[in-house]
Image (cartoon, rainbow, N blue to C red; front, side, top):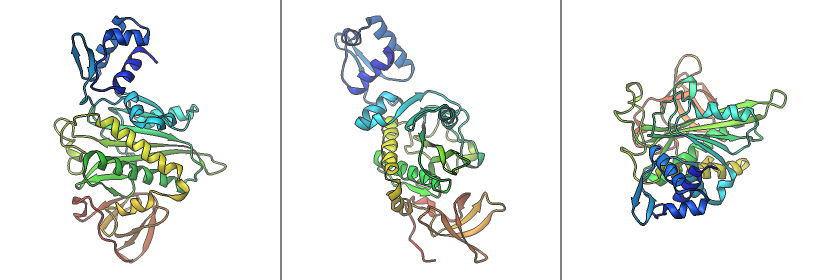
Length: 338
């Protein structure tokens, strides 16, 4: 760990407190010039400090920069479960972490970025990931699951995200099967789980769960092609340590579900938060689009649908588009009977 990381850890542990250059230099065993250089580097990265003669430097409470040190502080003792690396810009957190997984990275390795230049969504779509306005997380898992059961990773992550964003915003979050989190009718989070399988056993070698969260809209708004559907947790830049809080909340909640995977502790809440059940939908990604009614979500997190010709099917892959205006509330619709 370098001087920058050591100093940031001190500042994160005491946000709002003042630390003199002399104290920091003595504590870390470096020169005051090295301290000044590290603080200067942090300022260039977007951290906001107050500097008072005779008192030293203070990391402002409203600084909202993603950092491994800040996330670990919030995680507390559970931070030991993760190996967190943060980046200003990457091509794709999933791509980077898959490369690390192939080289033997341990479960719990986490890659977080403030921007992706080649973010990936489902169905080979681009996931818009502008600088500074979102949070892009990928978590490496090595579970004893088969291909079909890997769907539980995505659904557990969706519940972890929904609960976390509600806590920080006070606004209700719903889930659109299978992997999107919505607020007030707009998508604020997408989840993409990619996996490598053992051809002999059929089990997972590893899974990388990628989570992209829109914290606030980019300057000028979202691109025209997604403006009708894309939303954010907040309408303007947040004040306070929001990004680190959201990252820590998602990691903590997801791992609690992951530890209890056989019990599927998240499932009831996943169903309760569904904004799809009971709605007219279009089923996509399975040949020609087909109109259907979403009936329920079964115990395997499949979406049960009834097509207009009366045939019923349990969808374990693909994508759906809601045909009604049911998404505007963000609350789950009333349950219906099959």
